[in-house]
Image (tube, rainbow, N blue to C red; front, side, top):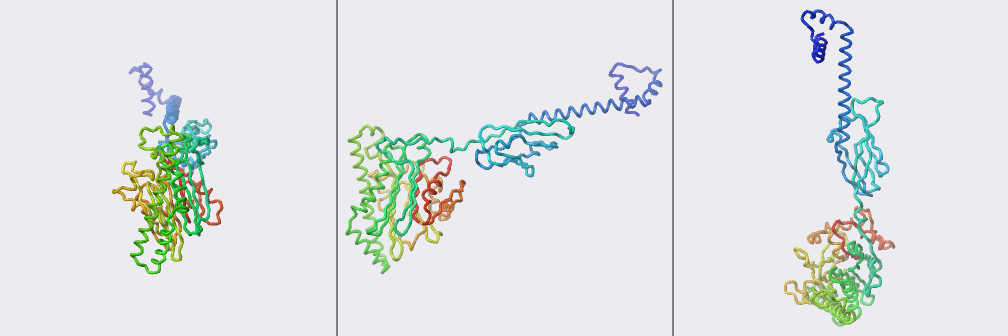
Length: 484
């Protein structure tokens, strides 16, 4: 009763009505009448209802204006965006439904409060949250809040693919992939123009060559990476790979080759370490002649090209015509004997050669890399000073190894080495090479599989597809040769 009296007194005071003392008994009678009590009750209920409605309206307005953070996604890639209703201060929602997700390739999973699916559009996309909050009537229309989801484009789609100029005097194929027999082994090679070259329509600077010499039983694989900042480097890499095959096919010292073979057989029979040292000396002598032959071949081409096309030699920073042909260069010679395989290698530049044992438990790097602490440390077969360096003697660039057998022999340019091994030290770790093989066999973002089976006629196409892997910041030419 006191509440009714207090309420009526406050109401009268607010309205300027004064109850005089001589009418106090009349006022007491008034406030206890049932219709007065009912009227006060109705007023209070209406006031409370009005305040509740305002609170609901105000809360809805707050939700409509608040920012709901949703994680970004990438077109074509699985998306899972969790909406934390508690963290977003949305625990008073009694109903939520999302409209417009289906057109984006997405849906809302109420079990884990996640937007999921594979986005099929990119950009600042919009969809709608339909909701009700605690206190709203069932017949009230659903509230609508427009939400924004940023789906980034596929980075690959931002790159152009402009063909190189086929009318150019030194044009060569943008992408080449091939598989074949090589002695008793098999070989697959893919050489692909990098995205940075495709984007501007420039040429593939990498190159490769291989051959099995049936008469001698030796096989050779060569890989070269033309230095992109030198305008004719693609010619240098091409000449280097072809020239080394030419040397061993047509210009190698027959007597020295026979002496080398005889000593290998003698070493196998005696295990005489002095004979092994003689073998290593002979191997380095023969390989040295091959590298000089390659260098001179490129030099001769540079001089001849300058005579016929001097306008191509217009770089003031170039110290000689040979500089325009700068290219790294690696090659591996191998032959099967009764006791195993003999492998000879050479390397200048930052392209690794490695052999994995038959059990695939150990991988050995067969050359050291020319890498600089701050970049620019790469050396080239076109630089005459590599033949006379005291800091890095030429003899250290050659390697001789005997193995019982091998599962894989790898030669690659830095377009593969940089994204897959990152740092030079990883090339010395067998576990990193095992990871590399797992990657080739399908354990990669694109689930691309290269099946190393001699019966697989699609292996070149498979390797070519694998070579399209995405690696942020690594868009150089890629060349990978694998003997297996």
